[in-house]
Structure formats: C-alpha cells, structure tokens
Image (tube, rainbow, N blue to C red; front, top):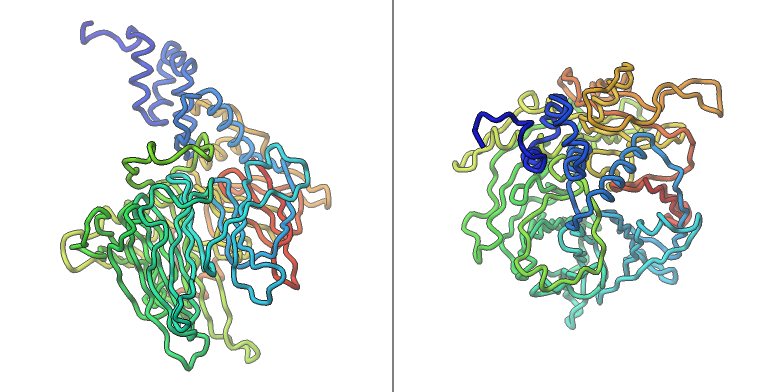
Length: 570
C-alpha cells in the first residue's frame, strides 16, 4: 500500500491496533476526525475498555480476555461512585473481640482477634472477611470470618494481594530461654492460609527482644521481591532508655536480609513506596520527607545500601509548634518484578479483580500530628492533625527532576520549590483513627452532620464535573452521560446543600488552622477535587474504604472493639 494512503482507507483491524497505543486524550481527538474513525472506536470493546481504564485511573487486573464484561462492570462502578450510590448495603456482625490490628486491600478486610476470654489486648489470631461476598449476601450476615493463626503473639501484618496473594505477619515468639523472644516474619498465602509457595523461608527471624522496657510497633510494605520492615519502639517508662528505629530490607522470595539502617528513637513512623526501588520516608524530627533509593534485591550483599537522594522540606512551623509524628499511606503499592516461577508454583486460589487502581496515580496521604502550646492554662498543649494529599506520580516527577542519584550530597528542596503539587486537608471531615481511608484517587470522610463524603482527586472527574456544572454538552468526552447533578434538598430540613461540588481552594476553617501552624502563607491553590456527599445521615464511629467498598464502623465504647460493619458495595 502506498505511503500516501489516507488513514481511513486502512483496514479497521489495523486502525484499531494503531489506536491501542494512544492515550485517552488522543482517542478523544481521533474520535472526532470523521464518522469512520469514530465507528472504529465505538465498535471496539478493547479500545473502549482501555479508554475507560485511563479516564477512571484504573489498570487491567484480570488477564482473561473478557472485554465486554470488564467494560460493563467498570462503567457501572464509576457511575455508582459519581452518584455515591449507597443502596447496596450489607450489615455484618463481628463475632470476635477485635484488637488494634486491621487492614483493608483488594476487597479483603482483616481484623485482629484478641479472644474474649483474655484480659490483655494482645492479638492471638487474625480474622479475614471477603467483602466481595456482600454483592450477593443478605441484608444482614455474620460472616464467614476466616481465621489465620501462628505460634506467636501477633504485632502487625502487611498485604500484597494484587501481586502475590500474600499476607506477611510479624509475631513475637517466646524462645526456650525465657529472657529472650524472637521477632519472626511469617509469609502466608492468604487464600489457603498455608506457607507461601514462593517464599524460600516462610518463617524468618529478623531480630530479638531481651527485655520488656519498650513496646514494639512496626510498618511493613511489600513490592515485588522487596519486603521493607520498619521497627520502632515506645518505652513503657520515660526513665528507661529506648532502642533506635530500625529499617530492614528483605528479599522475601529468598528469605534473605539485604540491608539494615538505623535512626535515633522516634525519628520514623512510616514510609511509602514511590516506585519499586524508591521510598518516601517522613522524618518528623527534621519536619521533612526523605527520598531513599533501595539496593538491588537480587544482590547477595548490598554494595550501595539505602541511598538518600533528595529531601523535601515541609512548611516552616510557627514558634511553639512541633511535629510529634507523621504517618503515611498509599494504596495500592506499585508493582515490582514478577516471580519467574509464579505460574508454576502457585495455584489460582483467589479470583483476581477485573481492574484495580493505577498505583502511579494513587493518592499519598501523609498525616502530620502537630503539638501547639496553648494560651489557655487549662490546656497546655493543643493537638492538631492535618493531612498532606498528593498524587504518587507528582512526587515521582519531583524526584526525577531534582534528585541526585550519583553524588554523595543530596539536594534539599524548600516547600516553595515543590509544594504546588499537594493539598492540605485541615478540617475535621477526614479526621480518623484509621489509615485505610483512601484507595486510588478517592478519599473518604464524614461531614459534621454525619453524611458520608468522598473527595475524588481524579483530574478527569474534576473536568467532567466542571463541564456538567456549567451545563455544557460534554461532547469532548467519549463516555456515557453521568447521573443527575446539582442542588438537592435534604428531606430532614429545609436547607439546600450540594451533593456534588468542585473544591479548588481551601475553606475558611482550613486557612485559619494552617495560618496558625505554619510561618508561611500557603497561597498556592491546592490541587482540585470533586466532593460527593451522601443524602443520608449515618451514625458511624469511623469509615474505611477500598476501590469498590465503603465500610461504616460501629464499636462498643466500653470494650473499644468493633462490633458491626455496614458494607456498601459500589
């Protein structure tokens, strides 16, 4: 065929193959060129599915070539989120006494079990509930809550469900020498509960405890072969000394410690993976975010170690204000290298999701706990929690532009040099005792009067709602029309309120709080989001979410344990 042939003279199959390499913005353009090219798009399930994935910030999760079913389900779920359709609710009774351990990922909700007949609150086992069962469950159910046990006191857990159907459990095991206890990582396949078939050493001793002067707290994340474990210690008495914070990098496939580093007690409290080999490590002592590169997981002995390549300073605090702690969360994690023998060693026990949030576009939440000296003599210290919200890909871009990967000295960026890509959330709407409050680009909270509120930071949805609120035809977007928008009246009172609104500035309350904490004026407009608010009022003690569910929590104030869940399937 001559090179001068027009595009619309090519076979539709070839055009479809060419279109499959375009992003959604390019698909919008070519879909408007002429009827023939638009017909190629509208007749292709694969192109429509790829477009829907791009604009919704999702990636394909199910390898089976079932495009039509996946496209229908993706459109249904996105429409449910846009309408905040909470009609599919199942109330789940929690039959065990819950501990402080919990996690939520990929449709799996885990709660620790400290046994009703024991006085202490140590976690003795883990209970797992598959939220996907709620799609067909009756309006009220009691489970099943599947139990996982190990021969140790459980300290905490981490999931890697999308990649490996893996749960890693950290436990403290009593040795024959009564004065010493071992810190052990147990690697289990979640679907079967058995030792994970890809782990050369399903049980790994990573440290020991020789006294009871400190209480251990951990954070653990898993990406590809890398398992990163942070151990911190809280003294039981201020008169006693404390252990250094310890960060361990482990190749869990091989059961091998790659690298270890330490910091003074109380420096770290958490971290997140930006990429499979770069982490963000909040440092509340320095009031900054450290960017660290990780050594190659395949190296038998690390020659490079943890390499500090960039520091991102937070805004300067006013006198009398100090940061007491910073915690962080980003769900889901990036995908690491696949195990070369995964298909041979593992069986498909757990059905994979059709699609999942794109880790690159996921929100990073950094919760900053600030202590403020009070002028009121009755309250010496006022504690405030504020949250920094930023897309993972925005942080990666800052790292790529400014990090020094070769020299010993690393750059330090002031807040003014990098802070334009973030948003501070400084009201009480999203204050929570739980960290599992965001998935992908959505972030759940509750209004003062008890309505569920979702902040959606997907820039496509912000543009979509702007177009709808301006009553534009939305002809520039190749998608179905969304649900009705606008002002809706609350049946319980006569006041009007918005179910959907675009938020592109800080509220008066947030301005007041931030001005009182920071010695700089945060004039930069925050990254915009869309707020979706439920029309119904709820009485929950807390909310958590994943990409397909919102869970309302009710707990017993006397035992401080969760007793009931309302699971909303979207």
